[in-house]
Structure formats: C-alpha cells, structure tokens
Amino acid sequence: MRDKPVLVTGATGYVAGRLIPLLLASGYRVRAMGRSTEKMAGRPWARDPKVERVKGDIGDPASLRQAIKGCGTIYYLVHSMISQKGGYRDADRIGAENLVQAAAHEKAEHIIYLGGLGDIHHKHISRHLVSRNEVGRILLEGPVPATVLRAAMILGSGSASFEILRYLAERLPLMVTPKWVSMPTQPIAVSNILGYLKGCLEHPETRGKTFDIGGPDVVAYRDLFRIFAEEAGLPSPIMIPVPVLTPRLSSLWIHLVTPVPASIAMPLAEGLSLPTVCTENTIRDIIPQELIGCREAIRRALDWVKQEQVDTCWNDAGVLIYPEWTHVGDSDFSGGTLLKCGYRAKIKGTAGDLWPFIERIGGETGYYAADLLWKIRGILDVFTGGPGLKRGRRSKKILQVGDALDFWRVLEMEKPCRLLLLAEMKTPGEALLEITLNPVGEDQCELVLLSRFLPRGLFGMAYWYILYPFHQYVFAHMLKGIVKASGARMISRPQRFTPKINRSCHLPENTSSCERKAHE
Image (cartoon, rainbow, N blue to C red; front, side, top):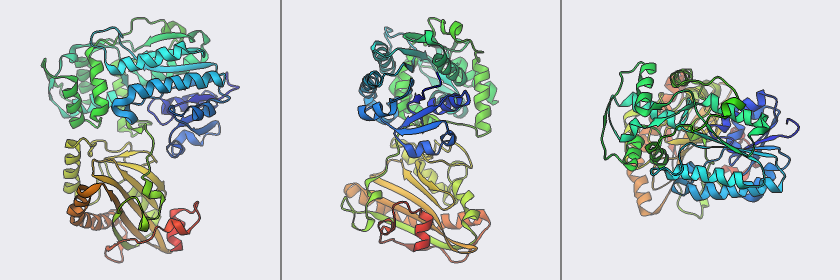
C-alpha cells in the first residue's frame, strides 16, 4: 500500500490538516491537494520529504486528474460550505462527480470520504446532511471502490462544532434555547475520526461500504453544555427551551456570540433538529481503537487550546483570494481609484527586535493603540454580517500564511520584515494592511504601516474619507505602540506618506520585500 502516494484533498482543512501528519508518521507518501499552495507551504508537514504539494480544485476536472495521477487511495475531505455559502450543495455534487470521473480515468484504487450522520428520511433532515449523503452516494456508485464514513459532531480543538459549544458555554450563563437541546447525538473525538480514516486505508474489506462512526456516549446537547462547563470550571448554564427559535434565528445568535459565521452556523443548526446516533457499529470490529468519551474529548480539546497547540481550525479552509490590484501598478491601476494611507518612522533597533511584536498583533494582544476604536469597529462588523474580532488568533505568538486574525486574513508573510493582511470585514471595497521593516543601517530600521483600499462606488469613497482621520490617528499611534512594546527607541516621529509607484514593477519577480526596500 505504500508504493503509491496517498492523495489528501482539502489539505488545508480541519480534518485533512491533521490526517496528513498521521499518514506521514505511519510511513505513507502523501500528495496534498489544495487551492492555495501558499497556505500549504506554511504548514509544518509541508517540509516533510514524503510530501508533495499540488494545486487542485474539485471544480476543475483537469487539475483533479493531474493531482490523482499515480495515486492509489484518495481521501475526499472537501466541503464547499465555506467557499460557496448557500450554493454548497451544487458545488459538492459537481465536485463528487468530477472526482469519480477523474479517479476512474487515472485508475485510482480507493476513495475514502467523511460525511455526515443522520437519517436521510427523517422529516427534519437538513439540506446540509442531504448534501453530505448525496456526495457519499455518488462516490459509492462510481467505478472506483469507495468507503463512506458518517460522523456526527466532532469534538476537537478548532472544530466548528466545538467552537460553537465552547463560546456559547463561556459567554452565556443563561441561554434561551431551541427544542433541539434535548435531541440525542453521538459525538466523536477528532483523534478517533483520524483513526478510522487511517484504518480504512489499511483494511480493504471497508471498500464499497458505508459505516456510522461515533464515540461511546449518546448524549443530549444540553448534557454537552453541562459537561463542558464542568471541565472548563464554569457554572453550569441555565437553559430555557422555547418552541419558536428557528434554525435561522439560532444561526444568527451563534454568529453574534461565537466566531462561526451565520453562513456556516445555519447548516449546522439545521442538522441539530434530528437524532444523530449511529444505527450500526460494524466499523468497531474491523478497525478496533479506544473510543474517547465526551468528557475526555472536551478535556483534551481544552488542554490543547490552553497550550496553544491547535494544529488546525475550522476557518483554515478556503483559498487565499488576492485582489487583482495587488498584481498591477498601483499608480495607474485601471480598475478603479486606489486609496492609500501610510505612516513610517525610523527606529533604533533591528527588524529582528521588532518582528516578534508585529507577529503577535491582534487577538488578545490587540493593535498596540486605540483598542476602543478597534473594538467598536469589530462590533459594527459583527452586526453587518462580518466576523468582527471574535475569531481572534490560532496562536498568541505564531502566525502562518492563511491564518485568520480577527477580521483579517494573513495573505503574505516574510520573517522578519513583512506582514500583509487582507481585510475580511464587511467594507464597501477591498482593503489591505501591510507592515514592513526596512533595514537602514547596522542597528536601525524603518517601520512602515500602509493601508490600501479599493472602494466600490460612491459609498466606498465616502467610507474611506469619513474614516480617514481615524486611520491617521490609529496608524501613527500603532507605530508608537509597537516600538514601545518592543523596548526599541524611535529616532523620528511617525510621518505620513503616500506611495506613488508600485516598486515591484522595476525589480525581478522573485525579489523579496526586504531586498526591494533595501534597493530603494
């Protein structure tokens, strides 16, 4: 089984990002497929010599065939709920059909798929579970043998279900809840999920079959809240069930209280209205492993969160979308008016001295200045449908490309001189925030903070100019705050500037940002 690489699709997703290190540790060669090679390159497993990274998309049959070529087993761990929002069902069906055809064309031997648990004929079956079962059916009916695993709630640090459970329990001592809090479910620890996924690779008798997988406990959702509160040292929440709290209202409430957006919370909330309990347990005889109970799984997840060892998170998935204007000359961009606000200051200290404090920006650290203004902007963002500041950071000290950082996304990073953030907040335009450290001597550097904004229409222009005075105040004080936190000394006061030229037009494409600044 180890003579051919194993293809893992959705490589930057929650489950795939944890499965890949497990396969590598077991001696398998892995071909990791994702839409963002930049995000894959930042993962710790990307440096393993047994890993090959390939760019592919389930909506692109040609890229799928290229990714599958030469592989024996395919892990289908892609879900379009984040990228396609309400259109995920069509995207997932097309993706499954494309995979079946590409796998048959390249003579793959086995497809392993992780789907959702729930009675497809139940009167309250959700669109999300219908879609998950539809994908499983398409794979099973294809010419390449497939194994379908059906799981309910995944208990593990960073999973969307666990984050909803965690934030609701931590922030709401009194909950007005829908009737589904009494619905039985059979959660499974993420480590058991990985054990079954790996086991299916090593047990050919699982091919062509569907298995329900779950942990040892069948509990109601209200019991999960109580168990979480006990393990987290919190008072047990008081729950008041009401009959009128629809999945739509539940998802909006989840969006306001937790980092999970309504577009993801809605399908998950719909699936809570029916029992999600295993109807058979034959997989336990084929792939025996120690099943972790709910209490122990929650305890382990909380320990990982405390130790900042959250390897993957639900919001890791998705492609990095570069705004078009990042690739063209700023000064003569033909797609619209590009607005900029920049501040810079000379510092007595090296880039290495300041970089750790730039890498810690956001989350609990904050933005080194005007914390109240940032919080107000985050609250406004939440109420307009954005993520606000609730997402925080995966780690307090370490960033990697693709990480969510409050209402930003890490687009590019070059240690120790450059951090580029893409705004995912709700704005009438596209925004980037860039922080750079340019060496100007042996023990001096220039700290630069540059905001760029491409407005959409008149409202976008008004938005920029109304907030411009606040930008000036915040950016100037951010520079001072970063320097103060680092213990370095500011040689010159922050000065406002507006860059006129896109410097990348005049240097080779592979020139690093540090080299560009030194060239200037």
